[in-house]
Image (cartoon, rainbow, N blue to C red; front, top):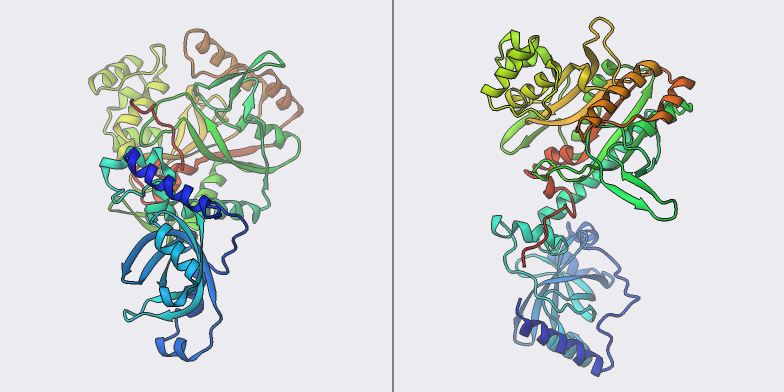
Amino acid sequence: MSDQYIEQRKEKVKGLRDKGLNPYPNGIYPGNTAQELNNLYGEKTKEELETSKTPDRSVSGRIMAIRLFGKAGFIKVQDRSGTFQIFVEKNSLSPEDYELFKNFFEVGDIGWFSGHIFRTRTNELTIHATTLKLVTKSTRLLPEKWHGLTDIEQRYRQRYVDLIVNPKVRETFVKRSQIIRSIRDFFVARDFLEVETPMMHPIPGGAMAKPFVTHHNTLDMDLYLRVAPELYLKRLVVGGMERVFEVNRNFRNEGISIQHNPEFTMLEFYMAYATYEDLIKLTEELIGSVAKSVCGSQRITYQGTEISFEPPFARFSMTDAVLKIGKVPPEVLTDREAALKFAETHGVKLKKLDEGVGAITEEIFEIMVEDKLIQPTFITDYPTEISPLSRRNEENPDVVDRFELFCFGREIANAFSELNDPEDQAGRFRAQAQLKSRGNDEAMYFDEDYINALEYGMPPTAGEGIGIDRLVMLLTDSSSIRDVILFPTLRPEAK
């Protein structure tokens, strides 16, 4: 936008003030929204509106278009509920209001309009304005074209403009709000208590991830933005809050992609006297319920592919998934050298050099299997060495009672029967501490207070985390996580 154009609009702001008019008045109250007017009069014919004595109605919104012809014109205004048309003519307004409209109203401004409802020759519901007010003067021009890949970065950087001119973007975030509300209703109806736990932790924990670090000056101590609320939520279970959930932010100091944002929203919930098998059924019920509530069906279309959230979802152990879906030779799952060779041959880059066969298997799974899991699929029986907070399987201690839910090649949820044996948990923490000492910056710290909590006794419990952003991506047919986060993290703009 040229500086000249901005200066021209600022001159109009000055012109308003010179006339004793405030370009940014307060105390403006629209009587109705656009949607309310459509609900009230949408069924009425042109003749019914002409013969009935309908009261004057008022709306306020951003001016999206002005079409002038002579001493009259049509204005399209947009509020939070939609758009509505205004008809303005000189003979219906006071001289002061008409001069204000003619000389100062422009696309992008916010206006207030009052008058009676009628239908135009094209049968569009319209307010015939008899009074109007300039509510907010805009000094920047709305973009004429605001779509497609050419403008994608600017859309994220200036989401406020994106929301003004792109109705589909607003619809996405309305649906996001509906999804979160539906999730809350689901858990409250099942006797879960919504809680809030700290966002700054003295010891980061609850996930194998690199934290962001900050510093508290008064206490002179480092704090960590939380990577997960898990250990605090389980402390609440120890304290007798047997069913708890939280919808809130996590922060992980990791890369940015269409699936990853360093700041993201998670649902985590914990249920005493339940196992991960119970959570499989609960998860099917939850996601199916949310899809039906928000999308009207448990079958949706995502990026041209039909996805069914009708239970039961497909289910494989990690071993079966790697063997049957990934077509990996059986010896890879038991022999570390064979696993290393297979990984090297198939371009699997190991995260750490000292990984055991279980960790290598999981990384092979990521490359050979994940992108093939299009329909919702539970993967169970994860290796113990990569699951430091999960309960060991009683028949096979090399795996844990855990599942992850995948859909369209992406992890959506992670759940397990919780490890409530304090000695076993302390041993797992010590193993994690050794990994950290050898340079693994995603390994967990030893959390002594959490062990102390477990020593008081935590009932048998199952817990789960669901990525809200990825779930919203699916239910709004959004290809990138940036499309479902109002203000995603971006690289600094090049100057």
